[in-house]
Length: 135
Length: 135
Image 1 (spheres, rainbow over the protein chains, first blue to last red):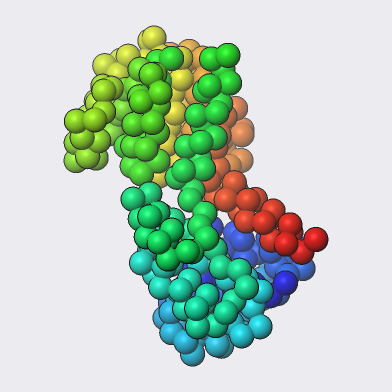
Image 2 (image 1 turned 180 degrees about the vertical axis):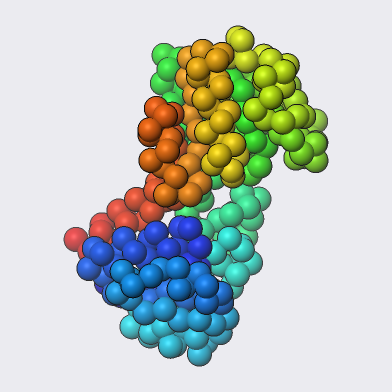
């Protein structure tokens, strides 16, 4: 699979490395070159420094042949913007965005952007542990 | 259940509200009063402002009768310290700490602290989605 990862923070960098190790073709985009450099020599994919929602940057990352785009920055507005561009302008088959602020979830839903919500997931897992103990 | 939540950030505040709504007794500790105030009037639990690893603060939060302590701050060192104090000094039956920096996981393991690792979990879920698509 050709996968574009937007945002090379903690989650983006871990996923870039793991998906690359699993044999996928990865392109990572971040506006901060330090974050991209932190991937180190072990990373076999493409690193692109630039404004994440810039069409030229997305093209440089190979968006026209991408099977997936994962927008994983800590900025919901940025994730929403990049996801919409990927989905509506470049017709990327699957786009998944990270929800940071739970209250923003409805905006993603309104725009039909598939999401992954760390706070909701972790909260669900901890609640399941506690309820499991109570039984 | 009597549950102490350390750290009233995004995850801590969502869990405080949800577990309180589910009928548990919740005490939340944070050194930043603004974060505690942000819980609003809908929160029925106890809010304690203070240094998270201070024994007096933990006692004020009712640690002697706690069934659970969840240390969910974004600071791994703080989570480790609070978890050790809860587990070893106050004998809290179950202590779970959030791992922020994946490289710190080994420290938690070394100290036998049960953890929840958002980055690892989200990474696992996204990889499963992608592998599911490939099949």
